[in-house]
Image (cartoon, rainbow over all chains, first blue to last red; front, side, top):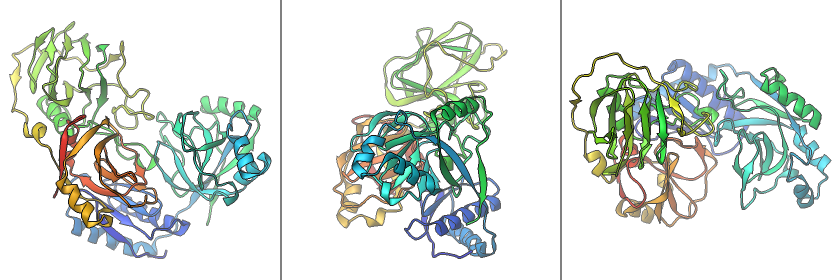
Length: 242
Length: 281
């Protein structure tokens, strides 16, 4: 694995912020995630680590000596070149793109001058990379939206967006894991639960995984929804190698 | 069991926090003032992660259906047991049928009701801390029953403990470290931030405290990046937002300062109109 020129910064009294070059790409993400895993392994659960597009935040339970800690974790990074690439999954997320669920489809069709069928096709043909999960529990920051369907988020956010709604906000697409206010243009809805705090693994998707949206009918939507509620729906997944 | 007769302004069960799920967007949560929270468990000889009831400004009215011991720490919201004033930082024996209520605020805004053995409400992902979008409810509800393990001990006289540190409530100096984007600030901004007094706005809650004063700002938003409890963000309009316990796990505003752990506790006892000053460590 290639190594980058990292910047280490003290962040408060017990955390270190590690920064990669300020660009969004998959190689950087893989590098961050491998480092995160390695640190977790070495510190065996004694640290907390979370990542974003270009950075990793490592927090210790108590006050740290910053320079010693940076020296130690950087030596772990240097050995990363011998670490094998991790294997990630691609999850198939069924989405119903009926007007009833995608209340901004007609608006987008007019604004982008693209037929609704074409919008759906463009939205479902790519695989998206999960760079980060945050903002709301289970909210995925996805990369890879086709430029033709980029559209700015609303100036005035909607007060109520239903759980499972799929939207477009600028160059990003995403799913609302819970009902919430939000400014994205809604194009569909998934019956899948992205976050359920009662489950052993509240969020089944991990940063580094891919997701792919598959269009489903309204009938299939309610069928899957029932299965999800009965905890009997198995989400399709494949291993990815990129 | 404790029966919630009145909820108070905002009362929620809290503990140390929910750790290990931040990379799924789950806030750590936990008691806003970890200092007063820890004090209550310590006095009760509880485990250090036992759950307490955090109350805010206007206290609840609670009826005990079993015998226990309680200890109230943090802000002084004039606690009363069966309408008789009781002291803070004391262990009080509570009998079946006793009613705990509150009155006027004397200092601070968040008070902690610790109970022997801790509250035994639902554990969600390793914590009992209530939080929006994570637990079923994010505050206690009227008519709700809160579980705990009753005691069989015979009543003894209440006993006083060491007095809580009053500096914690009087202090208006908020100790900070430089944040990751501090060096992007202009010299003028850097000077101002440590010389100016800031006022807490009416937008202050468990998620964040916003400050009223504007720090003229030309910094652009950054790529959505990692933040934590106590991170001070500078918004494009020049307002400062200090993230608190139920904070979002990432954000796109420059992170200019980071509060020390003890200053997060200090700040959590402040409210609308209070003045603070930042002091670099």
